[in-house]
Image (cartoon, rainbow over all chains, first blue to last red; front, top):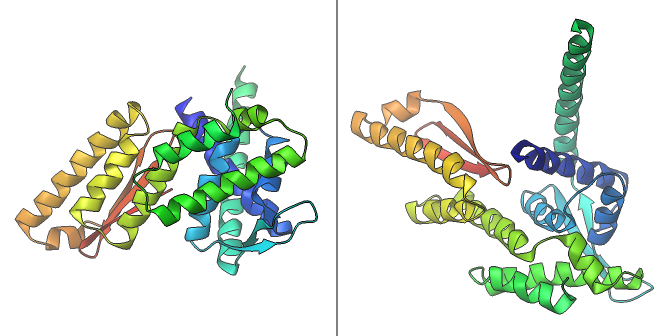
Length: 109
Length: 149
């Protein structure tokens, strides 16, 4: 379970970066898009967004909404893009390694 | 089942030790989340259930905040505050954080005893923490860096 929580946090970080690489989003939108695909504790997305913003990977701005008050949008910075590329590379190597181990395990049976 | 009011109140209670400006900023994020959720047709109780425990969120935010302070200026005081905040995340942290922390203090003390050359030559890093939070401690060039992951 310990691994599971931490694992999901790492994945959440990757998902947020990937989504923002496509287009700027507001917090609620990010949370919805991710929780439609994977099971996350939605509240922990905001601490993550704050941390990554402070680390310089995102900038934020307010944009008017037709339905109500302005919403806070997150935008990926150049530094954030670089960070995303590193994470994606790590993710690919990680899943490749795990896939190989699974395959070997299955062949042994 | 919590209403928006109850959720935000508990969250703010957990963040009492943060500067007012930081707290307001966090409050705005969660207010916006509730507001949009309600526009989308969700009830306050549904939204707070999906968000999770406000006390746990507050602990995460506190830990992140204190770790940032450590990153900007490392003094013994804020290093201890950061450790305390991370420890606050749960009992298991006691095992996962305190152990390596004591080991690190050992390294630092050993460094002082044998002169800074020791730290200079000891370049390496260790990652400690549990499922909720990880801290990377790295030494090198006569200093120790603490960063959150």
